Image (tube, rainbow, N blue to C red; front, side, top):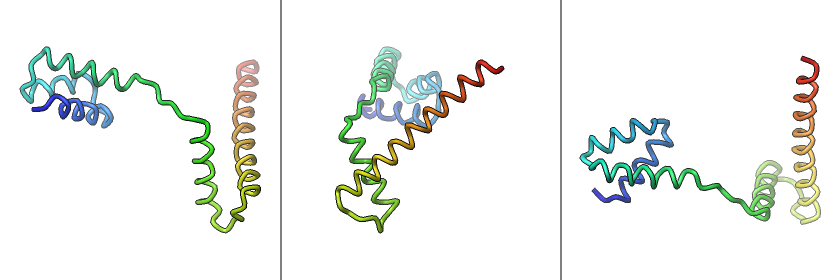
Length: 110
């Protein structure tokens, strides 16, 4: 079987909640040699450890899309969209501030 296909299968199995040892056993059961199993697992784990990056513009565009879906009758003028986005981002920031404050108070109180 093609090595790339085996890598894809191993990635899918790990995402499905199966542990690394079970994936190794599955590859061995499929007739893959031990050296190839080690290479495949290294490739799978290397792909999983690469950080996911997102550009700020992508995040802003996604927020605009979510706002457009949540409020379909909202005005589509850019000024209103920016105001809605700012309100949403400020409310998320306030939520994080409240969570941090609550955890600090909880830590010192108990």
